[in-house]
Image 1 (cartoon, rainbow, N blue to C red):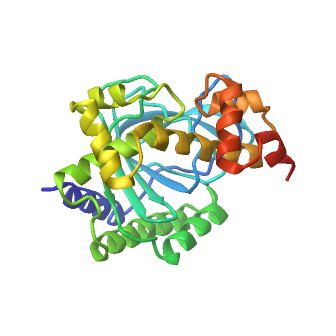
Image 2 (image 1 turned 135 degrees about the vertical axis):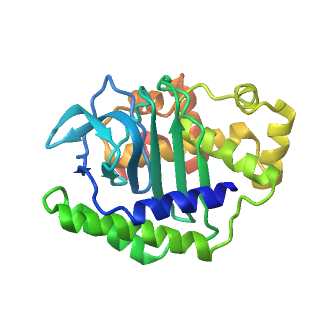
Length: 280
C-alpha cells in the first residue's frame, strides 16, 4: 500500500465511523510561556488511537485536554496550535490550503519534544479544494460542541469530501525526489520558527546538504534559506495584522534572533518597515 492509498484508507475509516467522542472548538488565545504555531488556514484533526494531551483554549482559558480515539477538534485559521507530541498517538489532519488540500497522518510511536515537528505521511491534491469542505468547516464552527449528532454527521462529511478530493485530483508528490521534497518543504514550514538549517534538514532526512539545495532549486528555484525566510515573513505579516505584539516579540515568534535583522528583511520584502506596515 502506497502513501496515498494509506491516507485514503484512513479517511474511509473516519467517514464510516458510527460514533465520535468529544468535539472541541478551541478559542483564539495565547499563553506567552507556551510556544504555539500560527497557521494561515483551518485544520480539522482526528485522534485515531492512543492518547494525545493537547493544551487547548476552551471558553477563555487554556487547559490540557486528554484526547482519545474518536475525539476531534477544529482549529480555525486565527487559532494558534500548541502541538504536543508527549504521548504515543495517531493523528489525522485535514488542512485546506489556498492552493491545495493536504491530508497528513502522524503516527507518534514514542514521546518527543516540542521541536522539530514530527514527520508525517501525507497526500497533496494539485488544486484548491472545493467550497463544500469550507462549508462543512464553517458548519462545524457554528455547531460547536452543543449538538453531538450534527457534529458527527459533519465530521463524516468532511472525511467523505476529502476522499472525493483525493480520488479526483492528481498526486503532486509522484516520484521519489518530489515526494522527498514535499516532506522537506513541510518540515521547513512547520519548524521555521526554530533554528532550521540546510545541514540540520539534510541530517534529518539522511541526505546530503547539496542534495537538499538541488531539490529546492529544482522545485522552487530558490535556496532553503530563501524559502525559510519567506515562511518566517509570512508569519510576521499575520502577527502584525492580528496581534498587538511588539516588533521585538514578533521577531522572536518568527525565528529571528536579531530584531534589527528582522526589520531589515521585512523592509526588503515589503518595501516598508514592520512598524509602518502595521499602521497601514
